[in-house]
Structure formats: C-alpha cells, structure tokens
Length: 200
Image (cartoon, rainbow, N blue to C red; front, side, top):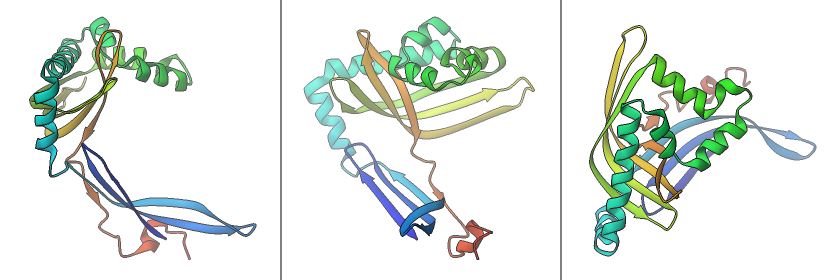
C-alpha cells in the first residue's frame, strides 16, 4: 500500500511518500513493515509575508529570539556547558533524560561527551523569525556546520534550517533544528520487492 502524507503549516510544506507491507490478522489489517519512498520539504511560498508580519508587529520580541539563539550557538561553539544548558529547552532535556535507559544516554552526558571528544561548530547567517508565538518560535537560517573528530577527520556542510525554540526561564531556548535541504527519494521506488526482500 502506498500512502502520501501531506502536512503544511505557516513555516513548512512537508510531503512524505511511504510504502507499507500489511497483513491481515483476525480480520484486521495491520502494518507489518514500512519504508519511505520520498521526503520533500520546502518553505511556503508566502514565507516572506510571515517574516514581515513578525517584524512589523513584534520587532522587539523577534530580536530577543535571535539574540537568545545566538547566545546558544556561541555557548555551544565555545563548549560552555553551563550556558549551553541554560539556553537549551528544559522540556527537551527533561524528555531526553526521561527516555534515557542509563546515565550514558542523558542529555548531560551526551553533551559533555560531544564537547570532550569532538569539535563541532555551528555558524548561523541570514537568520529571520518566521513564526513567533507566546511559548514557541521558529527561525529560518543558513547554517554552516563543521566537525572535527578525534581522528582529525573534518566534515562540513551548509544548509537551510528551521530552528525551533521554546520560551522558558525568562528567555528563548534552543529546542530542535530541521534541515530543509535534506530531501530524499528512493531510486528503486517502482519495485516493492526490493523494499521488502522477503515479500513474495
């Protein structure tokens, strides 16, 4: 079964094509396996209008959003654990820690390990607030990412990102980032048996 999911909102147009392998058990159809055929994400055509509305009506607050986000990235790039913690969404930290099966998978351990064993930096440019609510905000920006591992292997990339923030503790906090450019299409989409080799 092929399914197309479409989810459009003020800041993103999202479409995913998925193929499901289903099986009938006790007179009910159930999903046995699934596989993505394609994933396509883009900004809405009227995104500039959203940006201008935010600027015109909430200029001071949108400047605070951008200032707090820059503080987060500066802290992360400088490996300042305390400041990174302060400007990371407490809701995300709580969620990650609640799902951690041991202390090695807590937000604190993962962040400290990334600071100790890697050298990842993020540089933001062309940033603009595309959504501003009472407790959530979304920033569209060009991100330059680079990372150097223990083995001195350097990786870098530049991409368009949507960055999500939560308001808590009197300021805006980094929550999540989504790479808009990371679209995907399965090359073997016409041959379902190649998705599920055991399918007869």
